[in-house]
Structure formats: C-alpha cells, structure tokens
Image (tube, rainbow, N blue to C red):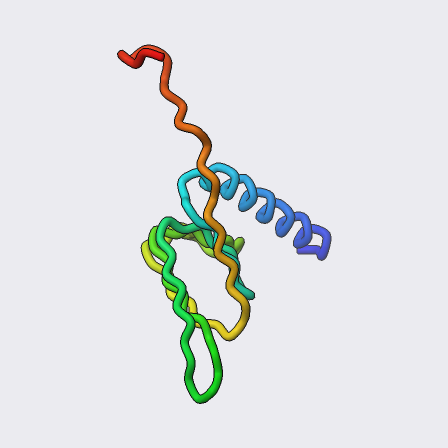
Length: 107
C-alpha cells in the first residue's frame, strides 16, 4: 500500500465518520469534548475531584456515541473518563416538534 493509498483510505474513513455523526447527532442531548475524544450523549455527570492537591474531572456518560475513526462500535452504553485537562459539555438545541401530516392530528 502506498502512502497515497493510505492517505485516501484515512480520508474516506473520516468522511464516513462525519456522515455517521450527521445522521445520529439528533438522537443525543449533549456534545462532550475532552482532550482525547468527542462524544454525543444523553446523560452526562461531571464531577470535579481533588487528590494530593491536584484537581481532576470525572465524567460519566450514558447512552453515548464516540467520535473515533478506528472504533468498530461507536455506540456505547456507558463511558467513564478521568482527566486533568479541560472538559466541555454543551446541551444540543432541539428543533421544534414536527407533527406528521394525517394520522388524526389537527393543526
């Protein structure tokens, strides 16, 4: 495999990952960024901890999707992250509820 073939493969994998993200993002309530990973999750518990004078973050996510091109299964039931680096948690905005046409709903 040439360097160009490897680069094309990695580009294709990143594009497929982006497309998967775009398809699943509306299933989740939160976006979570750590220094190593990017997650989508429906439950987030962030705790600030201290030990030996050092502050760290303990993050527990439930019903999550992991942005990682090398994972074969990106949907996970539970994730626990312990980090000394910054953690960013954002709640995703939900679109207005769209009611289907017909089916007994009146507008």
